[in-house]
Length: 257
Image 1 (cartoon, rainbow, N blue to C red):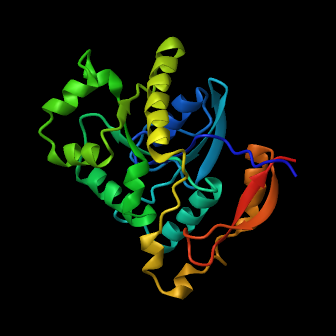
Image 2: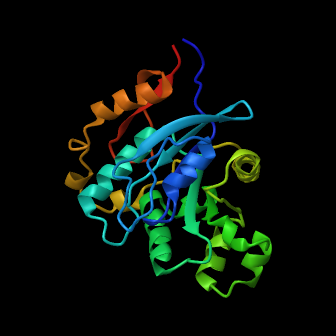
């Protein structure tokens, strides 16, 4: 059996509906892998993982549905969480908190709170803030914008994330697209150095707080997700146990044949 080889880094996109998560995923992969369009209704209905490369490194990006909204239904929330964890096994390196530049609202604050509930407060040690609509800076630096903002919730978030942030113009192409990706990857690599390249395997406080019957994975239909992962990564499944994520969760590690 060969040594374990997994795409690095593993990035999960999180944020409120309309923040530009899917478009950001496409910008990271430099190709339209996730469905993205303007509108008030969520486009992403299920978790989806896609791979790409940057400077010879494999990248796995997982887009998430609107599980971070205040009105997200409990059963939908649990299913989406389970799907998200499976697609990012054995755990994400980076939680990319996507929010539109200049519009960090109460809904965004709710989304951040839900991220902590879903992944645990320790997840913020693996978080990077990604501002969309970089073009709205109109020549102003992002550092200056954040220094001058009077949005205390936004300032608090940036501090909580260790001042790890960058901005994207998701309509950028060519060299501009490559340059903003390089800046993001520099932030990601800084985070990897800070964490020693560790995956985030924090306790899921939302699920841990629920009765045992609500933690049942019977309704999650894992088999169809295994087939999806096999297609995405071209890997064969080896059954293994990863503690610390979900109570009683048997999850999949993936080894190259």
